[in-house]
Length: 439
Image (cartoon, rainbow, N blue to C red; front, side, top):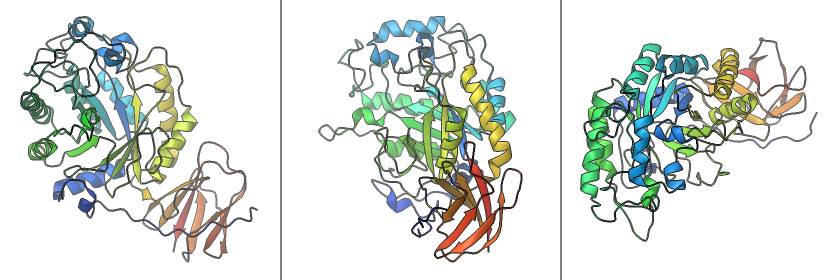
């Protein structure tokens, strides 16, 4: 048995009602509908992110237009060849549901400016500008609503295609004219599209913005007029959450906080140095290295790694939004489907320790994390080569202790400042979950 006793850590209780003071740029009092939506969001814990658009045809990720310096007019001709004959929204959603996901976040419009839904703002969309002539967002919305999954819509603030979008720090070598930039015009366009998305596709659970960072220089401040956009969303659908992947502390009017490629409190990828707020939290991460389909990217994380990521995220009081980049023909890569199946199998046994929980009273440790629901503490042992695990739970007493998988009894022994969990064997597999019911 290891001699080290962990220091007692006070429990951190996160709420969804007292966080308005943490927002930047003014206060914001969420409505009762938003408070309810925030709670449901936190309970869901696991979502699937989908990056899919005409960029998928080039097999080089969603930033290919910018990275390869493709002419903004020539790029539009990709739409004329986009005809994903194998796209089946119901098959997608059933695979996500079987994996245990509770919601889907889909790229309705990415930085290339192409809309994956029918819009009256421009023929540059999947219905009017392609031989496919089907509204992808409509079909996905119908499938999600039918199968009981929430639908979140990613929406890009920046646009490499429209000439009225004021040039930011990206998209500067695409041949776009330097004249004609007009943010009033561009904002009107965005608000019209947001209105279409929030009035034509049934219940939308979240609008997930991205691209604020294209104009983030203190030297040349830019007013995105976010309050107007946020107010419009909350007016059109009072229970629709607002999220913004700006890598900053939350702004007033935002209902969840996003961390890209890192769990809250970590910054290994260099995009998540912002403080962790009291908002509901979400970590978005890729299965391989790419968001959009990259034909050369076979560097997939293993199913065990992804299960550990899901547990680690939940133990930090956050949701995991796990990305898939579908192929140009509309099929999900088999590597993604294999990992979804493994996650679903694990959740069918251990989902009790994930869904509806919050970060546990024992803060994240090198061996793993804890999640909690009321007086039930779930100990997620991710990396521990011993049969004895000290837990700093203070004066709380253990009423019962079992392995969540199989229900076998686990012995515990009181120590100063907590208990030692005495496992029947050294933990194996991606996550050994011990269920402790506390008195």
